[in-house]
Length: 125
Image 1 (spheres, helix red, strand yellow):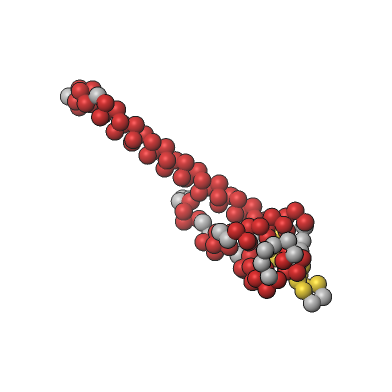
Image 2 (cartoon, helix red, strand yellow):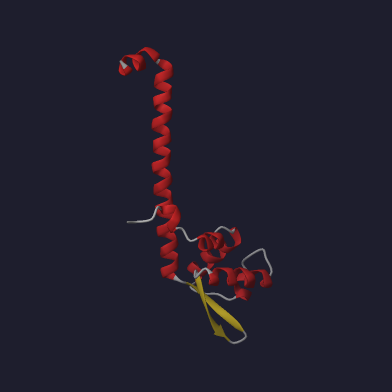
């Protein structure tokens, strides 16, 4: 039996993606193929040290992989983990869509009941 979407969500992964600077870093790495803390910091409004800390978070979540390159590390997006994140987002989105549809049906029923209480009474008889 499959676990509900909410139970399948990797909180560490979403915590890593939840930060706007880290999302921007992922965008840059995806568009450029790879980068170091130094090259990324040139394109972001944060220091090289802040970028390095963000890269550690992304690496722990498995979203990027670093390989030594001289005194720095070159980072690339881990395509498999990013695909996993996209799948989780789709699953969570579908679950919320279903919840919202149920709420909408309930609200429509309540609205119909308020508009035509006799119709509701007739259905109950």
